[in-house]
Amino acid sequence: MPDVISQDGSIRQDDWVVVPRPAEGESLDIPEQSKALIPADLWLAGYEHFTGRDDIGVWFDSHDEPEMLAGKFQELPVIAVNFPKFSDGRGYSIARLLRERFGYENELRAIGDVLLDQLQFMKRCGFDAYVLRADKDINKAARCLNFFSQGYQAATDTDLPLFRRRAS
Image 1 (tube, rainbow, N blue to C red):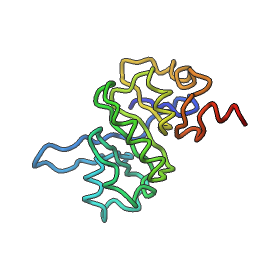
Image 2 (image 1 turned 135 degrees about the vertical axis):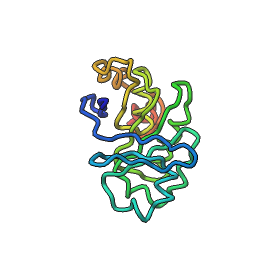
Image 3 (image 1 turned 120 degrees about the vertical axis):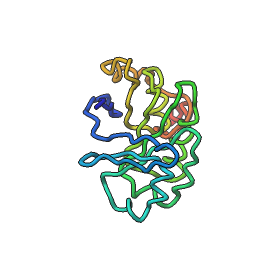
């Protein structure tokens, strides 16, 4: 299993398995004895079966709309957002919506094509856990999470822009 980086830069073993979307005509194959992240729309389709389980979370693909789970977010222990390519920025918007509009408070993690130079920007958008692409050095993650001492804009990590923080 890959490791996951926490917002404070610590590294821990990832005990969540990302279950891929099944091919057409196949059923969802959730591994036994493991915590599983399943596609958000399939979790919603099987809501009666999955509700109340702390070993099932969901993952959004970059084209998914988080509104599909409105009113049910706090039931999920983990939500992951897939970055299919490092240049696909839609996951940042999904994270901000989950934190700011829908008030999601549990773990929000970035998965997929996650690179070191994206970590601080992901953190500012509300992610608090990160699974790096396999070819990246996880030991450099803590430095990358805090590369800049201050952000100019307001974001999920601070609700005031820098000029307002300096004035007070």
